[in-house]
Image (cartoon, rainbow, N blue to C red; front, side, top):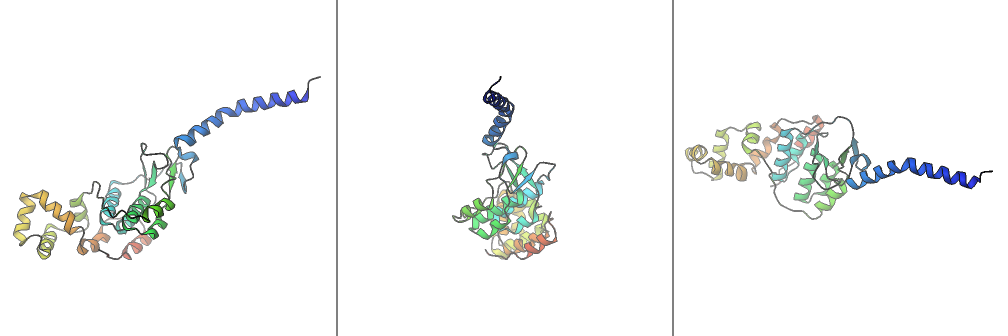
Length: 232
C-alpha cells in the first residue's frame, strides 16, 4: 500500500515544477522594472496616445518659464516612454512630467496634485508619482531648463509677429530703435533670438499670450490655465 505522505510529496513536487517557470518570470519582471507588475497609479496595456512633438515643446516652455500655465496645453493622456531610463522612470504622462518640473523649480507642492504615475506592459513609471514630486518640491531647484525649445516656433504660434517683438525690444531697452532690432534679426540672428529667449519669453506680454497656443486639453484645462497668474 502506497504511503499517503509520499503521494502528497510527489504532488507537491509536480506543483512546484509546474509553477516554477511562472515564479521565475514574475521575479525577472519585478527586477527588470516591467510595467505589468508595477505599482503605478495607472496602467496602459492597450494602444495609448503618444506625446505630440508640440506637446513636448510645451513641456520645455513650462520648464523654462517656471510656470505651470503651458502644462494645461498638454493632453492628460499623452504618454512618453524612455526605455533606457532607470527602472520605475521609463514611462510617464507628459503632462505629469510638466507639472513635476515646475513644482521642482518653484517649490510649489500643490502642483503635485496633477501628477499621476503610469506604466505600460513593458515599461514602469511607478516612481514618477505625486509623492516623489512633493519630495522634489520641498527642495526647489530654481533652475530653468529649456531643453530643445523652438523659440521662433513658439512665439509665432502664440501670435507674435516680428513687429511685435521688435516693438517690445525697444520699449524694454534691448535695442534703441526698431531699425536696429530689425538689423539684428537679419544680420545677427543668434543675438536676436537669444534676446527673445531671455527677454521676451520671460515677459508679461508673452505670458498673457500663452492661451493663444494650440492646445490638446479640454475646456476645463483652458479654464484652469486662464486662472494661472503672472508671478515673475
